[in-house]
Image (tube, rainbow, N blue to C red):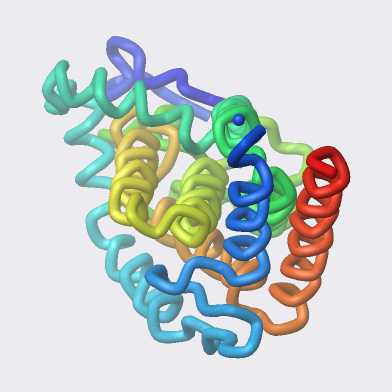
Length: 266
């Protein structure tokens, strides 16, 4: 899932292949974990959100439509048309969609918001689960990365290399695991911190744009990766069986913290 190398010169022509307040604070932490954020899009276990089939269907349909512009967009990026400042922004945002970036974000939450440390299990499951799901699909369908192709001479059909490409080192374009990870992470961070949900969503969009700009993926790969990230994120927040298991785990941790602080104050 970690690959930020972009187009090289000539790619367009290259041939390819706190104590007093501790108790109250801990109690608030317990309440917040036992009852997930209400202002966000993820309801408590008693009001599980339905399967986001429309959003996923729209992303998949958009990916089919994107096939018609995949090659043209890849050529435009390979020709160096992405502004340098935009390119720097995209490269910076890319870490939101890779494994190291997810770990750093999880560590920050663990240090700054200890009452929600148990919720990190859910966050990490969504982020890494989405990335793994995308990597599993990569095995099934062989598609070459834009920077591995002669974009001038190649057509859309030349981007595909068949099925079951486990042994092909180049065949990792479809779908985008970075985008899947970023969308799964953004969805869970938005559930945990509803005020920032649009910010997290924007970061996920930047990750997807970065994958296209550097020639790591076609636009259609990014859209399918986003659909996978949404599906896996929903399994951790909206799917009743999955969400309730995470909620029980998080609530037990919060109640233990309350009991521990109460015993200390006595």
